[in-house]
Length: 203
Length: 334
Image (cartoon, rainbow over the protein chains, first blue to last red):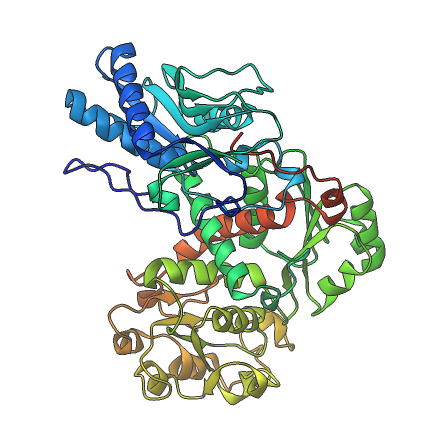
């Protein structure tokens, strides 16, 4: 039985996964920092306000963080929405490993934990939260995964960074920062919860 | 992850933990409205069963179907096997249908291993003779871990017809890989040959073992079925089919059955396991089988989750051939 992500008593707690899934390259290797900790904080402040504005005060909103780094971002947004408007939005996390379209071409990956929000997603305004929007394939997989959880009223997408190069007809409703990149570059998002530091850089 | 799962020894500690962790996530699907994951879409799994089985076969079937694989059951009865086809021809014929994985149960030890030498697809051992049954050991470990937490340092007692048990061997291998201590208890006639080389302690005295006097306090006890059908003699029809392994069933139950009194010897926290099917009144009393400490139904439920995890780890990733063509992971999250 998965325990619910939120409890009525207090704010949900986030437990960091044991290790970051992505291989970590040395920070010095030509990395260009694009967003620093205070930039990320301001960007998340703005997205939280935009969510409140666009959803008329956040009623019926559920934030679903896509593992790995979408999960802490969803928690941070939920905390901000709570402090700005006093509304506790639903909170959950989504592991999309089994829904990926490249399962066959990669070694099998460990599975993350999908946490359904208390009260489910049926009839809710679900906002998917992820760190980087790139090809759009992760979001497609997340939409499939969401279908198996229930039938939301509306699904929206919030990302910290949109780096372009979409391969599918997908766009974000809330964007922290548009980053023009070349396809060869890598955008690396580090978050305090998973990597010990808040930073977005181009490698 | 290895290409086949033939023995619990194919898994190192990290590999076993990964399967058990994945099984935790797979288990969550049972609470869902839509019990379907797309991970194995387009893959074909054949259950090739040369021996009767209800729970293992149906649990492999459900596991494959919940992962969106196409699952076909072939049983020896009513197939060309009963017309005299050899094991090799049967295996090659089924593999030639274009399957991705064969799940095989066979009454002869080593038959499954032999089949891997003939076919190209993944092979999972669903029980071969008195040799191994690795997915049973995984689901036992899964159920134990849920009840007890991490298994390292735990003491598990396995009791019963060990000589004819593939479950015992797989469990000793897997539990010791996971750092648990195992004690095997059986009458001398039902101790497996060569048990001194296994990574476990042995005893003939169930009462002393359960009371913690043989190898320390007990954290769980697993009762194994007395396999009359493997004891030769009058098959399952006669109740005296135990041909010299023990004097009478009554005497076996007195010496090695989990009676209500023996249940009381166990510490409060220790659960009771049985891989099923149970002979009530022989190796396990109804009081023990139906008590709150019995994990029998948890084990059945765990079977589906664990087999989903095994199928996922064997089948979902790239094969070596495909791996050569594998695209570099795209930069950043996609």
